[in-house]
Image (cartoon, rainbow, N blue to C red; front, top):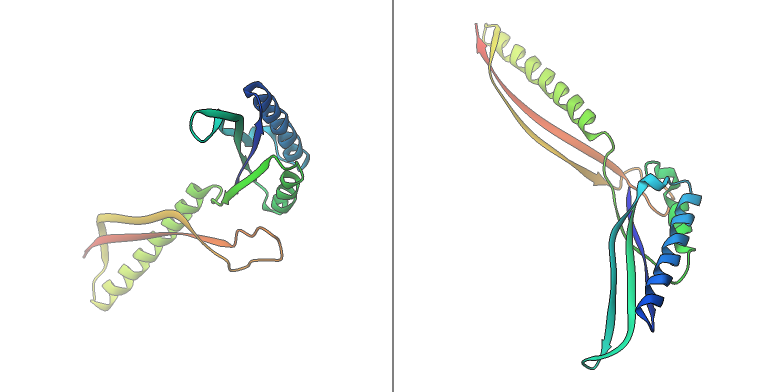
Length: 178
């Protein structure tokens, strides 16, 4: 799971806003690490510092913000990490989450192998029905959708639930009949 979080502060002076954002970011990092996330699984997404205006050119303050992406490799920790982020304080923001499948390439390779075996078994059955045998492979065409499809099946009582996902592959194989 990728969790998009950050800090957002407003102060009278740019330097004060930036210092407050740095301090809030440090508290955020400490909270996330305290919830069991490695510093290597956090990265800065954005950093902003700018003036805020009221009715034209009058500067009324400064805003500093920093976004952080947190990668959760163990979904059982999701609720604890989100709780830790929320406890940082009023300056914290939770901007969203996204899910992805770990080791998707290995799963895609397994799906491809199963699809190929299925194509061969069907070809052998059809060849036998025609009184023939499967010969050499003439053509292989793959249609894959490696983008995981998520559903809420299997959702539990956790606040954040990734549901289930699937990766599919269609393999069309043309065989010579002998």
